[in-house]
Image 1 (tube, rainbow, N blue to C red):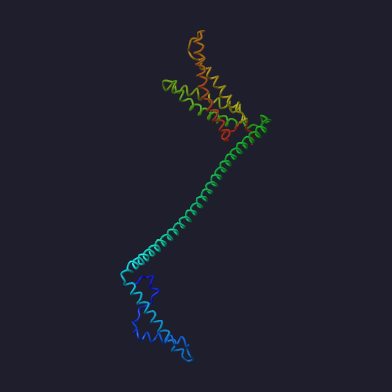
Image 2: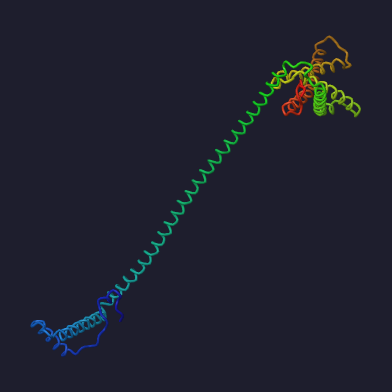
Length: 312
């Protein structure tokens, strides 16, 4: 029968069986040597007797343990010891597994902390980028405001410089050229703005041509007059809107007067005439107002030069 692993450290390896008579004589010799003590020069013999006694004791203990293990009443105890040994081994394996899981959990926690730190860094970077973008937008707005102020200041300075310009200092050739350019821009934009109204009002191509020609001439005259009226006061909103409104009223009322209709002194007739006049004025406002906007844009972009143009 195999000995349990827990008892193996207590029991030495099996030894050869010793004769009981020789063992008894040997024990008596050991006792006499212990009582009388070892004489000088007998150290080697005493050492050999001690080794023999230890060997006999180990053999006796081993035989006793084997005898105890072979008994039937001790079988359950042996099985319990073996079961305890297996439970200990399983507990050690479970403990090792738990330690591995704890190590993996520590690594996971460290990775989570690293990712959270990285996330915080990315959020900080995104916040900084948003601040930079907002600063750039503010800078662009400020730059636009500065450019607008510079244009207004330059216009004011030029207006102040040209306020006392005499007729001899005006470049007449440049004035004619700028007037032609203003008439061309105004007439083109005005004709394009009048096309939806013309398509609704006319019935054939000759009528469309005639009406577009009249609008072209009217807008050309408006462009020249607008340039001389506004001069270099480009920030005067009332002046820039009053000029197209005046042209629209004059042309609208003229078209109303030229209409072939009989006038009757009645409320219905007055209401009809007022409604027709309002419609005609509004239509002409939609023609001259885009032309005024186009001229103002050309003045500010230095495509056209306001009146007057000084000699170089």
